[in-house]
Image (cartoon, rainbow, N blue to C red):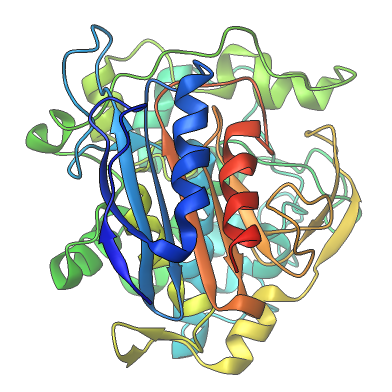
Length: 382
């Protein structure tokens, strides 16, 4: 497949590489900018282990003076949950974690308030009833890992575990991150830095000062997302002071590990990192998970009207199954989206991973039109 340098006069600071077969992807990327929908963005596709698209453009700052470069990072918010799914799958394949084992096997304190039977798979598929911290939780606690984990371990579920799915905007990252820490001895950020050291992957959780300098400005959405009818659980998960970090500086927030919502990355790194899910578990020539684990990671764990998001969803072990085509035309694909518009697509049928990262945030919870324009252009080129 012929790969060549990419540029487009319609996009400021346009750069990257693109297979000639995917010329329409470059056109879609430029169209997003022409519509005024972007400030800066990157988009990447890895197919059969080969990088066939890695394009970027626009600006990384409010004043539109700093170009978006290959080193620019952006917060991908909940798109980082796909990375957590991958990290757990790697540990399942190693034998250190089992999807059907109770979380409390690895984190004994988690068993409080009759949570001892909640399985790893239920936690990964948002069934455990722990979608939000108690309302009286101070929002600055999100920078205190042990404090958050102690709150989660001590709390009672908001609904009977296993009876429904209810999206966990923030708590998911601490539940999965503490599970990983208990079995590996390392935090999510440390696990990612191990991969970064091996392959220069820029997917980070907890930034150092030099990395903060590469993080783009992210203008907030013009209006809040549509959550549908505002139930008490939705308010607790999204709208209460306890639902997200506050009373902290931007620098302290970026330096902290809040895995469900403050990973920073570029598109190329995300697309490469998630390749083991689609290429038989191989990471840069080395097996990191086996076929059985991949099958278990993809198995549907629950399907139903979500108690937090306004969608009917099907969850695997940490990934959204593409029943709503939020991630393109292939219903057999998987994906995850982040607040503001970022997303990843994991498509085993085509041995393909796709990633979209941007800094101009939109109010779409999932299925951002900018991302879908790009993803649909990819599929039209296959």
